[in-house]
Length: 526
Image 1 (tube, rainbow, N blue to C red):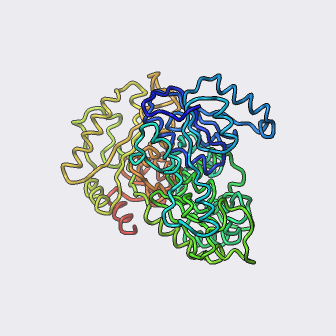
Image 2: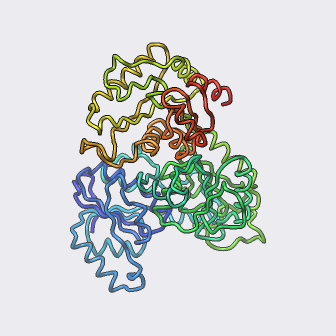
Image 3: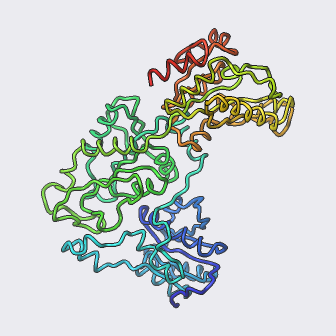
């Protein structure tokens, strides 16, 4: 085996990091840098089988090779496994584990390699004597360092963990843990566990934190066994898979936890986080470093006292943890929550709410604005709401007109309002109907109101907090949509509103003669 060459065009790369959860998450910048340097290469990641779900659907496109538990303690089986990797024809090994087992693998596979410098002596000096606390490099940067041998300028690489969670996974956890509705308002996620007891702030403190946050009006997502606390604002996620854990953290407004793997997952999925550090210390390079992350700890001489958080405290109590108060953590959560508060939207129906319902409108010359609609949207603009129009257009599926007609109508509606100083940020439409006559559009979709597909798409594109948004419309489907996204629902008596009021008044949080009256009331109380 030999060290890698910066001029080689490697085609098959094996990245090695056996464990654990947090460390594997923090190696993901390496995957992104390798993909950028070798866009056509096959990149595989070797890790313990239980951690590989972290890398499913990773944007680097890496494959996953499991290291099974059966190989532990069985040297012959491990050597045979290494030989099988050699037979796969890898031409580069990226060793991010750098221990005896990974050395044997490199030796057996016998290909070019780069490996991380673990700086073991330097870390020991830091823990034992407090030396080098101020200039110890971040672990993400340390993982990237060996890639310089491949001609990669690591100063230009993103040193932030990156994970991927898709919409189906979000929908599945919403169904399992949030009764199938969109989890809005986004909860504060609390994960009280850690691999080592020494790193734990304490279950009682986390429970007190949950109560404080609930008293402040937040919903709390608690990872762990349910405890005796009666509130509709706490959701317990006792048992989750790694993918469910990732999806739940991704849906949360803020994550709070100890120095642990889930804290690093929050970084990977882009959720603001509050990390509570005691025996370990940010100077070891493992603390969150992304925008929207706070690290809490006390400045005492005995920190850090452990490389990994294992061992026992030399005092009767964990002073480093005892001195971090519930109020301090709650204040940090509240500050992060407010700093990253998302936009509010006014979701408006089109036909019968802001324009007269012409019954399958397909001629833009027949668009007629409802009186007061311009003033209503201008008032929403002035109040900071993002104005989004959501409209069902089943005329497409029925064969009455095509999507081009809908798009012309929508564009003209936006233009007519804009000409009078009222801004509609976007219009979304659903062309589907399950029993339609046009096969392409005759499907049971997820976007036809009252389903939430259009609202979810808008939320992603405009960074919206659905719970602080509202829906105004003249049909029951508008009101039910609002319920499905946990937003307020307002009914107007224009269009089909009077008929809807007779049958579906119970779904509305308020009923108004027209959109202007509705907006005057809503904005006045916002």
